[in-house]
Length: 220
Image (cartoon, rainbow, N blue to C red; front, side, top):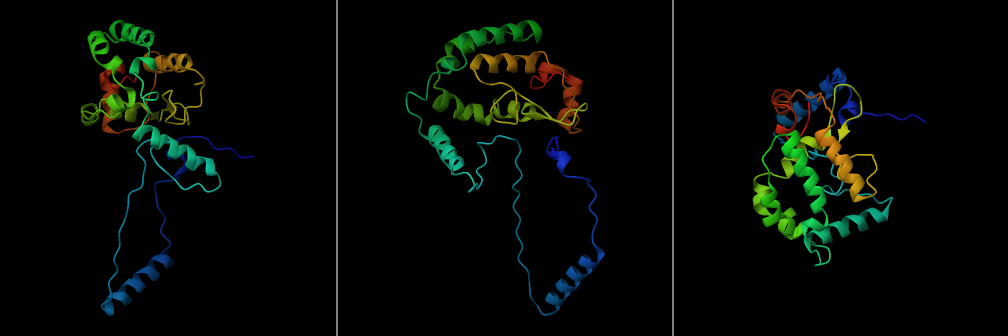
């Protein structure tokens, strides 16, 4: 069995497009014939590219597995109309112990000021869906979506496979069988792992200039 690895870009092949001359000539002749008869052609395009790898953000047709549509429908219902038992306070998911560990890393390793007052007086007691994930101010300031975008899946210079932040919304293939396992892996990714992005976009260049935590917690 042949298995191919690598990020999405590795499947695109060469960026150079080789045009078949015969096909191009036939296409041009057809367009000229239409124009000579006063006919017109209406064309529309739709950019369906996905900016990230979150499997719950993009709904596809998958008739081979009916369970897929059931799962997606359940997730949509959970996010749109969560019950009180589902819309729990944030601290029941991201616990006080996790916050204490994160605060230690932020203040000692990254040399950031403590944000404990925000945690204790606000965020820990918010409902995790209706008051955190759906908070319009957090959304407008991109305080959750932008860090996710730049750390979700990272193409790196020293391997074909991208580096994924430990989460269920990308292609991370490590052990996420428990919350403790997830947090340990997440903390190592943010504060220990050394990552060298291979992209040459402006935001990646800024990562290299600014150093690790100051650029969405990527250590370059």
